[in-house]
Length: 68
Image (cartoon, rainbow, N blue to C red; front, side):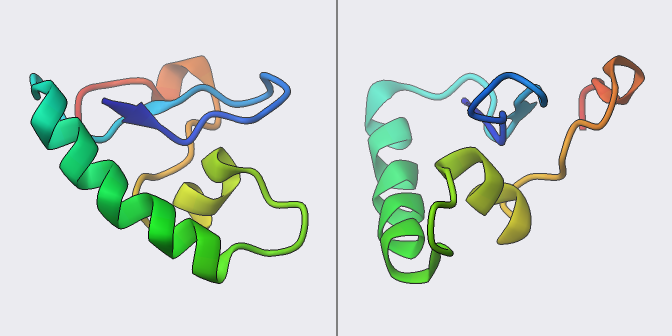
């Protein structure tokens, strides 16, 4: 499960969870989505929110992509 990409493609996503099934994905999204709905800034996309909220670190360059 990857999170943190930029809406217009300027930033890649980062691995948030590895090798998870559908139930685990839904469980995690059940945490992230309510936080996003309650705490997002006006016009903020989900990828920007998860970086700002600390769910994942931003991928700033291709060299920054590695297994965390």
